[in-house]
Length: 127
Image (cartoon, rainbow, N blue to C red; front, side):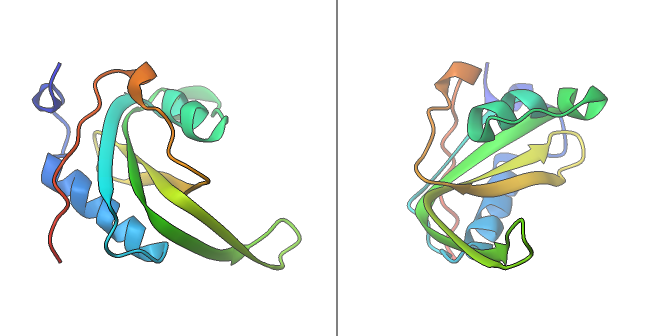
């Protein structure tokens, strides 16, 4: 299987551009690597965040993108207090048909994507 076997709106360039945008949102506009794998939204969320979704949303064909770098996320925690998360990887799930980023977050460290299938490594766009 190659990345060309997937016929949604996503090209490797679009995937890399979305990844760079999320990386910049998390404080690192110059990440060290980008990699991605195809699966369902549930498979991807379970691998990256140990979470699943109910119903059809969880079965949506998606792309899990993992970006390595130095990331910081300023957000509201469960008690609505300011919270800072850091990590060496960020992950985003993109709906394969629409190109919409459905999930994103930080990881303490990169996860092994190979259990889901072939892992693709697009070049990092120069900004």
